[in-house]
Image: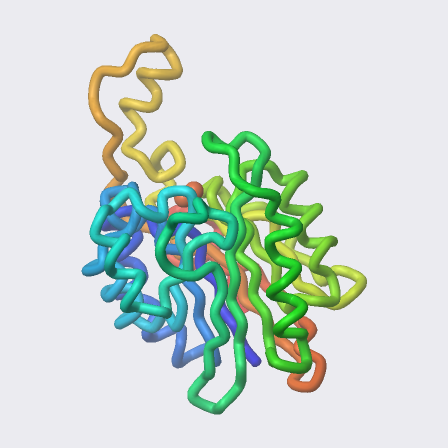
Length: 270
Ligand SMILES: [Fe+2]
Ligand SMILES: [Fe+2]
């Protein structure tokens, strides 16, 4: 299977890059399944139902969230009626929606997507993500119930992300980090056959501070004092993420390529 994962869509610039490019990439790269992290697609803070529809209509089969999952209040209701949107497994126990789902592609293949939140350097304490993924692997073994498994691990620290990659090695097709908005350069297939990238980066304008218009973040770093609100940068976005191919029998990864299309970053793709 050919699977594309795109990192955090940031504001209008990120949404525009998705709507203008994803339909073409889906076709050109003959993608079987596309996962898009949408946690910052609405004004950089959360995802509204209307913007979730925009990402799904552009070609995302699944939209994942993150620590900003419910910053847009209408997502609390929207996620109950739209099973293609996934929130973290270890979000608050009272939160609506699901942390994993088994999808069926047009060709009848089964793709399991799950998301977990890390604990290191995160603003709120979340439950242990390493034990959170266990029951999902048990009920949906790779090469059994699931033809491919994608784990979106949403956290700050590269150490925690690499640890999760190794924890899932041999049990997932792909473990990819999100949340930092800056792509890492460590795309690899781990010894057990799981593709790993510590962070997918964001789909947003990189002439910014992690997607926000740069003047206010710079002021806060330099003076220590806030003056204005953060607003998403509006220049041309780079689509940033990772492409994998999986073995049809085992579900393990046979190829991994970093993806950066458009905008300011050095370009790459399959
Ligand atoms: Fe994010
Ligand atoms: Fe986040």
